[in-house]
Length: 198
Image (tube, rainbow, N blue to C red; front, side):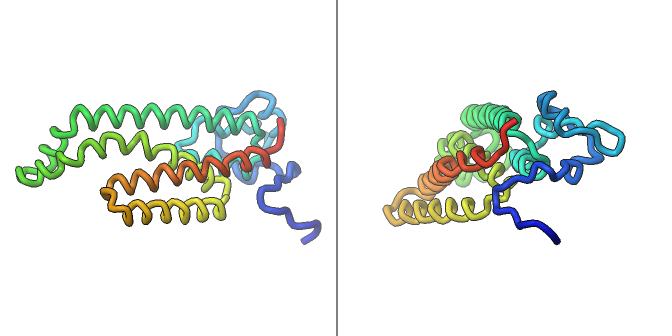
């Protein structure tokens, strides 16, 4: 092996993206990025970001296929908007049909009544937790495991403090999710700074 080892987060523009995307056909990057990616085995590589199921894949593409900063930010923005919309729909669905869902699942009236007490927490859980899972997918894809570990340790500490303060378990869980999203959000700009410009 020759040459120096790259530090975590350092990108090698000479590393051809075919190692990740070829021979798959994908789509979504700007045309100038596609041109920079160049031909691969007689076929032009089409874009990756934009048709991927989770933020994890977006991050992986940014790491392995020399996706440039603008394309990465566009993909993160699009997936975040979609995640937020789905979370809102889930909140509305649980709020409107929560008792019906519980009744379909459980036939014991006592358990139905107990579950009904927690439906408000269930209704707000998607919109509270979606941001932490969105960021976790991006961090996982870009292999920022140290930041993920530190964020989860801080979130666990916040959760334990909430439990120690005798908050309801669902409230403590929401504290964990919010802390998780905030800590990952603080570290997120470091990922963007390490992406190459277009």
